[in-house]
Length: 486
Image 1 (cartoon, rainbow, N blue to C red):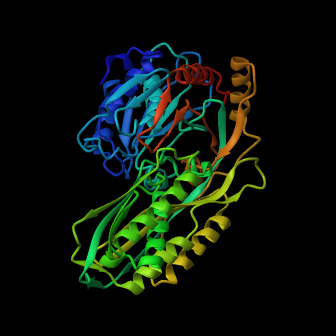
Image 2: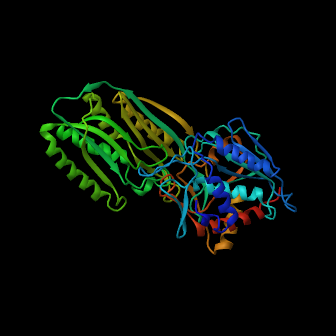
Image 3: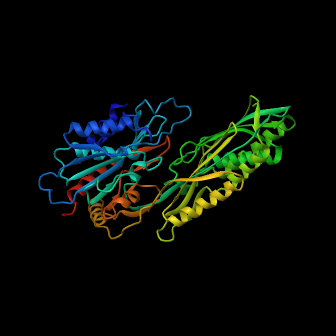
């Protein structure tokens, strides 16, 4: 890791981020970062414990003169999305993130950076360690598994926290103050199928879709970015319709909350169609590249002749699969009628796996309106069930309903305007913040979310603005100094 990261201002923030990023912390594998955080709290002599689900809570008393202020919950999540480029040799289970400075940005070498939500966690750690920053009594809440299931927030019991105000540090534009967010649900379709022996006189090909931007399946879903699973399905559908392409395997996408960047399919085509198939595919590829030339300039599709697989999918099931994925909605489903430019409901066809007689199609459906969330989920279920899939709904979590009369919102808006000479954007976001979930067991808690500017979250292009971190830090300290009295 470059030493220049530790020399960035504010040093206390970037040093804590560097310490945190040295600890492997993929979602659902947070054992090491949990121990790291507990050791950190205990080393400061602060009350430190983990709850039944393994969230870590650290308490710190108010500084002198701040004892009459309301107790504040500072909240962030410990896990990070683990995405890397195909040509990057990196093991998220054993390695810390390799960071570097690129102009105003801090980036990672070929992987996600972990600024989501590592910078928020680092900001909390800095306050816990500080001896000269004024603040009220603090409950620091570090949740687990936010990225792949909201597990920590969903299982935090009422009565554990003492705070009356919650500051969630997981927003990714420094001019925004979030007062609401989308809920989500996993829609997973599975079925088995029969394998057939590959016909004689066939030719094997590997089709690879790559070079897409990817990104956050909530915050970036409105940008018209390419979804590798949908693009691959379009190619396979055309190849099947025109040349009888048969599928042996498909592996597309990775994490349910990341827009798929890559997909690989192994297929066969009758030898008599060999040259015509490649020629026709190239025409379709050129059409797709033209459609995405603005949003996906680096899109690449390769069709390479390879080993002939021994078996392929049953043709009847294959046709149903291709038609179902074609019919399944991906992207924005409905815009909010109440908040300008807010995506209300969307779906990400995140992962498509076809191999050894088993199909799995994994979707993440998001919405700030529960009824709309289930409307889209049921539409997806119908598309998949029509070709014989079993469809499971899982991991459902609620959205966060905006409170425009929030006391802490007034505090943040006033401070932001004084510091920056303009009003902040008070928004609701299409990502899945933990506030809505936490509010189910803490209904009276006044909640707000803000943070430094982070772009490209959930992709290897993730980067954090250095200048914005300085703006965020100044804003954050002033908020803590102006928490309302009890």
